[in-house]
Length: 259
Image (cartoon, rainbow, N blue to C red; front, side, top):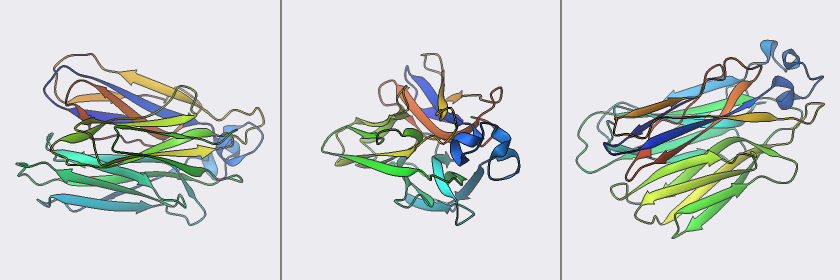
């Protein structure tokens, strides 16, 4: 999982990855190879917008198989150079797609694009989406139902991108909640999305939360990579948290084999 942050000020970036074993997703005997497809690998679907000077862009990526569900969402800005802000990374209600939106700040004059990521898989017990909304506030927290845990995150912020930005979209340590925070001026609305699933592995486990944090300095931009390649699990969900005035995350994204 890779996260990138822009802003020439003292800041630190923390990246988070949610990893799951194959049988925690599909059900089975506790052997990751027992997942629904050979090797137990989830599918990573990616779709990019046009690369041009448009001020606002939205792209929606769908799971490749109609029998799959979205377990994790991701987003990436290309060519933003700190002048483009993510405004949404939202899994839909049916968990069949992820929509990502971004907007250029005043004065940004170079071509850019935005990409949407969806980590998709199948299960005998599919995940569900929970939503929490804060109106005229800076923080929203979505909580998973009892006996379920977070597999993926999402957000939406309605605000003036010249004055507001998202600086946190992250699951908590217990994988029970997703917290979304907006920095700068108070936005009109902040929405947090949690993709939640009941464990189906025989030992009752679902997954793990891995993190990586950069140094606190004025290096710009910052990139944090959470590497789960040494585990027997696969990356599904991502998150990021930025600490530093005016700093925000532009690329919370994942792949099935690296985070």
